[in-house]
Amino acid sequence: MSDESVTMKTMARRQLSREPSRLDKIKPGESVAVPDSKGGLVVTRPKRKKLSADELFAEVERLGAGCPPVDTLKTLHEGED
Image (tube, rainbow, N blue to C red; front, top):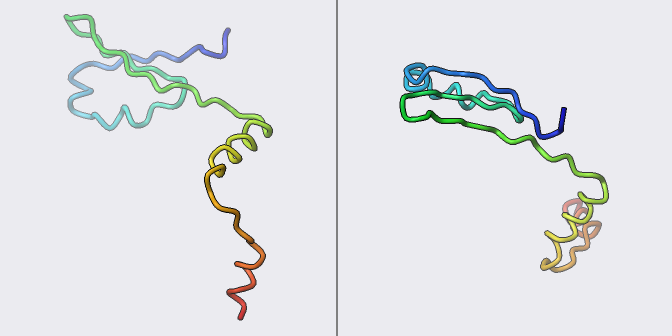
């Protein structure tokens, strides 16, 4: 079984029209098939990619690259005065 596999559930079109909020409750890696005469609809919530610590650190560095440096200790101590 690959990491990209998904769980497929089936929902009637009438049920989807009466309870559209049921699609909000599908979990990452699950799909819901809504069959009809024209082929149907498949709604999929993709699996979340888990990042390693190095990837997370690189993402934080990338996001903060254009920001000016901040002295966090100075900012913390300013609130004490």
